[in-house]
Length: 154
Image (cartoon, rainbow, N blue to C red; front, side):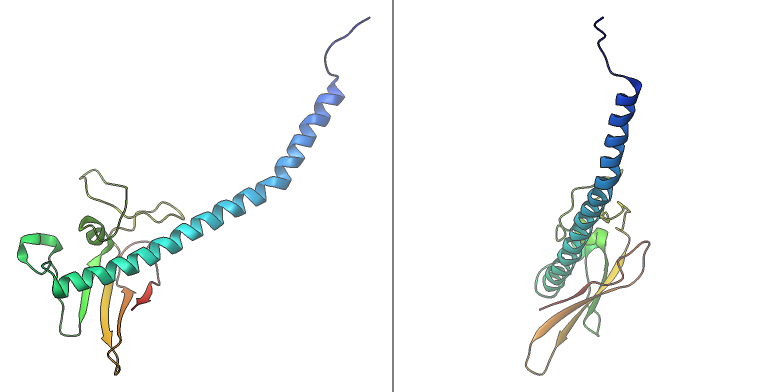
């Protein structure tokens, strides 16, 4: 008699083997995914710092201080500080992002959890030391789900 097919024991063995492989591989896949998200987050922070420096310089030496830029016009206070949202950095073109909201405004998303961090405010401070070395320090200044540290750039 010629019986074709698998026995129940053979099918269970294959299912158990596939489940075991899945259990062994899944932590590695999740870890790799988390490392990629962390790397994307670190790149976003570096881009924010660089965009902040460019924005400050454009405010100081360019024409962004002109009132024709409306909500994106900037002013540097007496302590050499500017406060701005990440959304304004994106919508002025200094911070490159691809996502837009329902009002066709660019929005900044945290790559680790896809939270919208566009409303995060930052303060950009220009520091000049005794050797005339210029450093721009970016610090958080409020908002929802915002990064807690940005850093500085020369």
